[in-house]
Amino acid sequence: MYTIRFVGLDVHADTISVAVAEPNGEVRSLGVFRNRPDSVRRLVTRLGPASQLRVCYEAGPTGYGLYWQFTALGVTCAVIAPTLVPTKAGDRVKTNRRDAEKLARCHRAGDLTPVWVPDAAHEALRDLVRAREDAKQDQLRARHRLNEFLLRHSQIPPETVKKSWTQKYMEWIKRAVHFDQPALEATLLDYVHEVEHAAERIQRLEKSIDEASRSAPPEMRAVIEALQALRGVAQITAVSLVAELGSLSRFESPRQLMGYSGLVSSEYSTGNHMQRGRITKTGNAHLRRVIVEAAWAYQYRPWVGGALRKRQQGLDQEIKDIAWKAQWRLHKRYQKLAAAGKKKPQIVTAVGRELLGFIWAIAVRIEAQQRQRAA
Image (cartoon, rainbow, N blue to C red):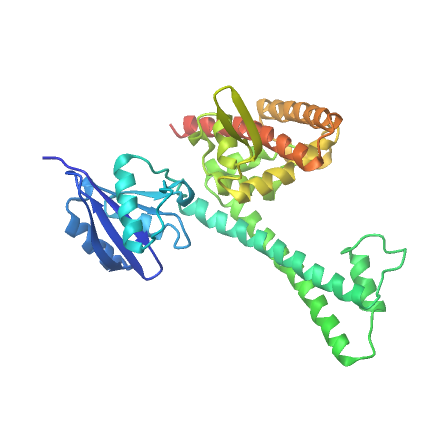
């Protein structure tokens, strides 16, 4: 008789707590196993034929290594979104065993929401893009420390230095800012070194991203190039979108992509009463940051400048038409919301949400073309 056994795993760096939901309704714990490939193989052998197992665990810091192990053994595995796991209001006891049992029970009931698991190429590119994002955050902190140090000691740039963090600004610090106390001089040199080191690190990572995008699979590279037809979406942004989203054809509609990004309004409705609040902020925070940054470009009137024209060279006219339509629609949307008295963060969030629709339209067309060529 063909029976399906649902297995829940509570995964940690060294151990895995395992529970199984039997076809007869029983949910029982199988104990704790070591998080090692040989232990995973023994677990699959113990539970029965791989084709009859449905394994799940929550997404977390351990990544997708366990998913690939089960997949290689022929086991159907799902990585679950932790924030969408059902929780009873009165449940105040949390242990590894109970978590594994809850996952097994909910997996059998179909109450869990799996996340998209990237392939090797997407995961490598995503780690590289996120490394650059970490470097940008470190650069911001290093600049703040240096600025605050200069302000504490009344070191203010002259009027000829109009902008911070330009080459002229850094030259002023190195040439004109000095202290009599050796301790302060050493502090200044360290802060300046950290700012310069962060800038070099970002340049190195951006060069690696450029090389990685050129050597990416043809389907991925085609989407990256096509997305750059949009205003505000240069190479780093396009690579970030593809790395975070993977294949956009997995979203059935732009509305589904918008919901995945967390840029849609929260809603509480009952009877004839409907109340909408702030954006849900569910899903991918990295995606939201990239989209909001790109949306700022649509505060300006539609225009195809030199940099954008260069990015659009060699693209199909259909893609260019979508990008031009996006400029007109999103700029009008920005003006309309601004005239209504909305704050700029709210306006840019609304524009970013609609920008996702144009990103979806371009990516789906390019992916369909790539599939036809491969066939």
